[in-house]
Amino acid sequence: MSKFYYKRSAELLDKQLDMQAKYYEKIDEMTTDIRKFRHDYKNHMHCLKSLLGSKKIDDALEYLDSISANPTMNKTSFKSGNTIADAILNDKAAIAAHENFRLNFS
Image (tube, rainbow, N blue to C red):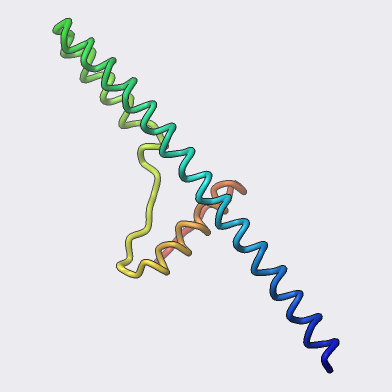
């Protein structure tokens, strides 16, 4: 009986460690995404400042349109009011996108 108990405990601890490792990988991925966004944001602002400084209003508006059309700017994020449900849905949506699946909710 105690052999079964220790074996099951070890399996549960292994599973918990795997889940923690995945969690930290996700945190690292999110941190990297934030760094990339900050970098891109600064470059976009410099570009817009330059265009507006040169009084190229139409070019600046066209540039803003191109930024808005970027798929990463339109990334879906769930906001149901339940933070746990939102975290699960966002995680599953990211996995589905990575595997080239499309999600439909109603």
